Amino acid sequence: MPAFRLPAGLLLVAAAFILLFDQSVGNLAPDESAILLGIGAIMFFMGGRIVDGFRRSGIAGLHAILLGGLTCAILVWGYASRSEVEGVLDRMIGDVAPGRIVTTPGGDVVAAKRLDGSFSVNTQVNGQAIRFTFDTGASTVVLRAEDAVRVGLKPETLSYTVPVSTANGMTLAAMVFLDTVAIGPISERRIPALVARPGVLHANLLGMTFLERLSSYEVRGNRLILRGKTQS
Image (cartoon, rainbow, N blue to C red; front, side):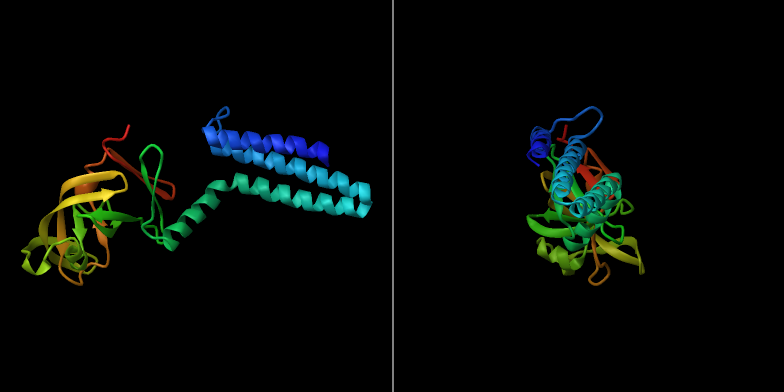
């Protein structure tokens, strides 16, 4: 067994080094390289278990082979299906923690897709936490009247003169300007927005009057990626 532990340990150290220093190996991304090295380390460890098993008895050795083969098959399947597994995990995160965002070291803001296919994004509007649904089909940012109150607006004093189409048909909304809209490190000022009448909307919409201020935005697989104009 000790003869197998050394290469297994070296592979684990190499995997940790790759992740720590974000080093690519050939055409593989750092996380892919680290996963493959980790699988190799587990295979060495299971090989040691098989050798030890046969030293004890043939039955113990066969049990070790079956366990090792099953473990390796699961690991190889998991690596080959990592995109699908990652997608399921992303969607679970999107529903368990709706609106949760992650900021990458490069300053990108990432949100996970929910099981219904939408993206919820936790946002700061005028310093208040407001959750929005990403919607490129909305020409403006749209606030529910209930959340407009939270950001310092008074829906009862607004002029509802802008016709808008909702899932329940046509209605009127009021044009306003939001002092600040921030998502993680991305912050924009004086964002044109609409406030819907009370009870009309079930979700705030992160529309184009904010999205067009960004350097870029994209949906990549199960993730929404937002980049501010100050991003490189």
